[in-house]
Every structure is written in C-alpha cells, then in structure tokens.
Amino acid sequence: MKPWIWRFGVSLVLLSLFTMTALAKTTITHFAYSGHGDAYYEFVQNAKATFEAENPDIEINITRGTNYDQATTMVAGGVGPDIFDLSTNVAPGYFAAGILKDLTPYLERDQEFDQADFIPLAMEGYRTEEQIFGLPVSTFQIFTFYNKDLFAQVGSADPNGLAESWTWETAVDVARKMTRDGNGDGEVDSWGLTAANSLYRWPIFVHQAGGYLFDKVSNPTRPTFETDAARTGLGFFADLYRQHGVVADSYTKFLEGHVGFTTDSGPSYFGLMAREVGARFNWDVAELPKGPDNNGTMVIMNGFQMSAMTEHPDEAWRWLSFLTSEEQVNDFMRRTGRTPARISSWQSFAATLDVVPEYLIAASDAIQNPASTTNYITPVYRDLASASGSIIAPVLTGDKSVEQALRELQVAAENLFAEQE
Image (cartoon, rainbow, N blue to C red; front, side):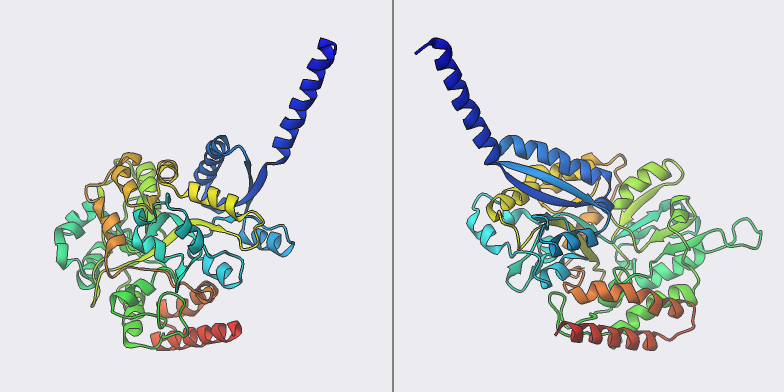
C-alpha cells in the first residue's frame, strides 16, 4: 500500500471517530429566567464552560427567557427545558402540575453529593412530604436593615442594642418618633419604616403572632385565615399605615437616609446599601422585631429543578448537582452577592461584600431561627398572592376591616383549593 493512501485512510478513520464523538454529545437545555439579573446569567455561563470542560460528553444549551410562561409554552410544545431555575415562589406549582421530577432517587444514589451541607430550611423550600423537587443555591430571608443615625437622633438604642427589647411595641414607638417634619415646611420628610403589601411579607407578622394562614406550611390542604393570630398579625401591619402613619411610600427613601428601618428587605439590600448609601449614613442589620410569640421570618429560596419530561435524566442530574455543588454555590455567592444555601459557604460570605455590617450574623441567624419558615409550599399561594394586594390595600387606608379582608382571602383560597380537586 502506498504511504499516502495509508495516511489518507487513517485520517478518514480519525475524522469518523471525531464525528461520532461529536454526535454522541448529549444536549441539556437550561431555562435561565432573565429576572434573576445579569450576574446570575454570568454565573450560569461560567458554570457551563467549566462543566463542559469536565464533561465533554454533555453540551449545555442556555435558553434565556423574560418570564416563566415561556418555559411553560416550551413544555406544552414538547420541547421543554431539562433544567429550570424556579424560586420557591414558583416551583410548587410546576411540581403539582407534574412538570418537575422528584430528585430523591438521585440524591440517594449520588453518594458524593453532600446534601447535609445545605441549610435545613433551604431544603424545606423544595420539599413536599417525602419528595424533593429542587435544590437551592441561595436564600432570601427577610430581616431588618436600619439607619443607626436616625435611632440616635430620636434617643433610642438601635435594634441590636435593644436586644430582647426589639419588639413590635418598641419598633412602633421608635417609628412614631422618627416620622416627623424635620425642616418645618409642613410635610413629613422622615419616616419610621418600610413595610410591603405582599403575601410574601405581611404574613410574617401572622407567624410572629403564633399562627399560620394554612393548616401547614408544606403541601397544605386548607386555608386558616380567620384566626386570632391572623387578625393580630394583619392588624399590626395595617395599623402601621392607618393608625400610626409611619410607613414610607418607597424603599428609595430609606436609601436616601429618610427612613429608620425596614421590615421587608433581604440580602439584595447588601449590594444596594454599598452602591447607593455610601457615607450618607451609618447602617447595620438585625433580625426582625419580635411579635407576641416570636421573631421568626420567611425565607424564599432560589435554585434548580429537573424536568419530569427530560429524555436525559442522568446527564441533567450531573448538571444540576454541579450547579449546586459547594464550589458553584461559592461562585454564585461571589457573583450575585446573595446569601448561600450551603452552610460551608457562609464562612466566606463576608468577603463578597463591599461593605460588611457589624452584625452581619443577623442574616444567618434569621435563617436558623427555629420560628422561621419557608413560604407556603403550594401552588395556591402564588395564585392567591396575585389577588391579595387589592384585597389588603383598602385595609391600609381604613376603608376595609381586617376581618373582611381575611374573610375574602379565606374564600379566595378555598376556591383555589377547589379548582385543584
């Protein structure tokens, strides 16, 4: 055989082998919600590059969408993504609809995946009964950011200085002192606090009064809005507006130095404070003021889920478990500034912040507080959240009673449960 013929034949074989290898790659489609922000998208892109280098048999196709309806449309069309990035606000509805796969068998089989390193409450956000339908990468717990200078101006110790005395009563008393017309022009220019009319915020006060809005947090079967605790919690929230008049109409007033503290903010404020506040005022963080029963909070998780319809579950699991590994959670934390879902990652969280508050530990304590909960793990809750704002708004202006609003929410929730049957 002539040498050039032999070399040509070898080249054909090598080309054929290369082509077969390329064709053998498995493509995993990852739906990336643009609402998570550019830093999140950069994280996914960087993870893709690292993962593909380590897993040459898998290609990650990142599809960026502006809303989750796009993902639902993809599923309905039979071309749904293999991996989703749903928060605990959204994921229960997808799981109830049969769109997400139970990850329990994969967690039991993958002995190298350190499930014990996750903050327990973070895992609860993607769990219903004995099934796990997602893995968390970050947490969003509601806690207090406060203006130390305004507390000093009204002659009060700040929340951390008040310690056990940081209660609803003290918070209202301080907020009333802070709400004033400082320059004498007849207009209020300083307020006590921020408090959001959201079903992911004011129910914290119901929990702090010792009650719940459903019979249980995970996979509830019936609503329980008309209880003493619900009346106490919603009543306290409403009185901040209608009786005390201490709530600012926007969070920007807090960043500008005109508000004493927040009751509706979370880890995203760390970046905001560093960028927007600077040296305008001195600030720190604390857990929420304690209600009649406790000072727990609500914790929302962001994470990743596997489609129940994926044709490549083993490869999808490799990508999902990679995204939520300690190394990648650390990278997510560094890029986004969000608090991590892994316990080990908290050791280096402070190093990701441009400004480290003295009582940073409060952000961690809020998650580990025994009285803290996830948001309610039911598709009913997200649907109810869409309607609750208009139901509650007249209560804040004194045009509707607390009892009437709770009755309306109870009926709305009962109807949503009935629709699921």
